[in-house]
Image 1 (cartoon, one colour):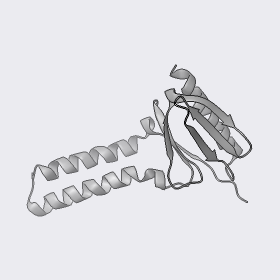
Image 2: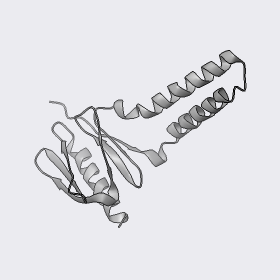
Image 3: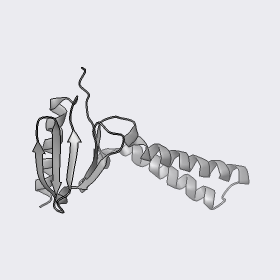
Length: 137
């Protein structure tokens, strides 16, 4: 069975998506202010919604993805939806046979099935969690 990779995305460094979101806000603002003819305003508003949908759909592009910034992140491994957390609330990280368990300060457990994932990517994820956990305290 072919092992799958995890796509890591640092949201703070993703300049392209920042430009896309700024374009969406500008299009929406111009469309709502009715700065142009009625037909043009309609297309500006529609394109702004399309750009926002493009921006927020990025987590669904990959089967295994980790989106993070300096405060927290979203991990999606072998599932359709991801689980979000804050780095400062991470109390413990346990990597067992095929499961990554993250315990938070409110005793909530986040369990991720790591079956079929490259071991280098799992190690990178654990290091990312440990590094961000220690830098925030």
